[in-house]
Structures are given as structure tokens and as C-alpha cells.
Length: 385
Image 1 (cartoon, helix red, strand yellow):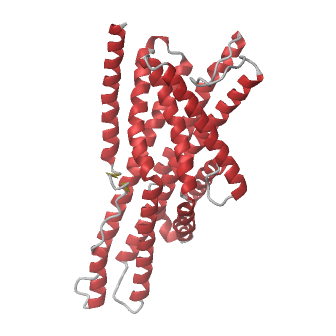
Image 2 (cartoon, one colour):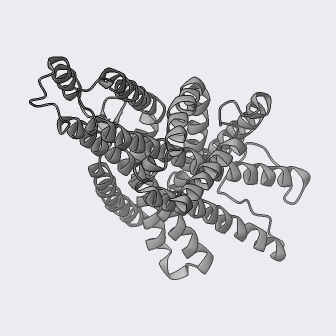
């Protein structure tokens, strides 16, 4: 487990680094965090507005509209994540100070590491897959405009229209290119960091639930029973509080992702289908990694919520299997029954959507439905012309 422990520490460090460079890791360097987060929020919001302006100018062209709208959604999603993390600063501090600290403390016990790091490899693979996919999407989208410079063409990185005139190749043009690069960088760091830190907290919760299940199974009506029962109750209360905070921080993001992921995926498939015969290797790579990114996002959000629910149910089942029937200790049996009356920890996004694996299935079904709708609209516009 020493190797797994080292990998976990690197995994934790890399996620933290992404949030630090985005300015949204709580209490790193408060003044610097505020400056970086403001730059990140303003740059992503300005690009969102420029992209939406482009959409408004090409609203009659389904192909161009879907291309620019999908990118606009990605930029606005990053802006939204920054705002949500800044507004939930105290909640994130609680998770770091209590949930993460408890998990770190338990990792010092070699007997608990196998429980705490179970399925860690899957979490790690999803994190690095998402981070690399977002990075390659950004890089492949950035390459084309710089290649065009060799032919004397001054293109923008993204399909944008700014509400003022400027000379191609002038200082204003390069300032706007710098803005696009800055915003693109923050889309990478914020998207990879925020979506993955949800996985980090889910991993910690699941690990703590397994340790708690182990503690429940070891309960006996002996002399130090009250002390060990109190420790179990404190752990369970921490996990319930952590689940509530995760719902507050990531609840709306889960709903937003469920809706927008389907929209972006169908628009990407639609674009790839229309441009199939003229796709360059760079464009093929862009579509592949962009779609991969959206698939990983949709799957992991559903998987994280599903894992928390499963581990919580197993934890309560472990309490049921404790040595309480026929123990003869009425107080012990009453305490066990009180614990068993608790419901599993279900992640509910704003009390309207439970995160289970069927959410991923619904997202994919919706994406397919949107794709056929876009195809119908495009065929209708062609006939109209």
C-alpha cells in the first residue's frame, strides 16, 4: 500500500495545484487568490459574451451556431464554477479541515489504508484522463490560428465577435488573443480542478464510510463500548455534514452538467458528421478529446454519487451485522437500532436529482435526441434555402 499512498498524495497535490492556479483553493494566499480568481472570472465571462455575440450574428446557420454555442457553454461553465467556489469558501474550508484531515489521519494507520484507498486507481485514472483531454482540446483548438499566421491570416482562437473595430495584427488584436489564451487556460484549470475535487471528496467520503463500517462490525458490549460508539457517531455525523456540503457546492453544477453535457455532445457529433469529408487530423483530435472530456464529466459525476450511496448502505449493513442480537445489553441494542434507522447518504442535487448511474444513461439518451433534432432543423433550413 506504500505505492498507492504515494500515488494518492500526488493525486491530491495535482488537484490542489489546479485549484490554486485558478485562485479558488480556499485559504492558500488570500490576496493572491482573490486577484487570480477575479482574472479567471472576468476572462471567462468576457469570452462567453464574445462567443454569444458570434452566435447572435449567425443564428440562422445551425452548423455555425452549434459550434460557437458549445464553446460558449464551456466558458460559461468555468465562470459558473469559479463563482460557486468563491461563494462557498467556508464550506470548502470545512471539508478540508474536517473530512480531508480525518482521511489523512486515518491513512497513518496501515490497517485502514486498504479501506481508505479502495478504488483509488479508478479515481486517479478519471482525473488524469479528464485533465489531459481538456488540455489537448485547448491545444488543438489553438494550433490552427497560429498556423494561419504563416499565410498572413489573423484569426481568432475561438469563434468570437467583439463589439468594436480593430486592425488585424495590431496591438488590440494581440491583446484579444492574449485574453483568449488566458481564458482558455482557466477553462482547463477550473474544469479539471473543480470536477476532480468532487471526486477527491467522494473518494475520502467512501474511504471514511468503509472505516466506519469496520468500526461498526467491531463493536462489542464491553467496558469501552460507550467510547467507541461515540467515536462512530462522531464519524457518521461528519460524513452526514460533508454530504450536505457537497450537495450545496456541487448540486447545481451536477444539474447544469447533466443538461449542458447532452447539448455539447450532440452539437459535437453533429459538427463531425457535417464536416466529416473535410476533417483535418487536428480537427479529428479536437472532436475526439472534446467528446471524451464531456463523457468523462458526465460519467464521473454520476459514478461519484452512486459510490457514496452504495458505501453508505454497506456501512449501515455492517452495523446490522455487529454482535448486538442476544448481547443482553439493552442500551447497546437500542443504540444499534437508532443507527439502523438512519437512511443511506444519497447525493441529491438541489433536492430534485439523485446522482446514480442512471443519470449518465439519461444524459446519453438526451444527447441522441438532441442530435436528431439538430439534424431535422438543419435539413429544414437547407430545404428553405
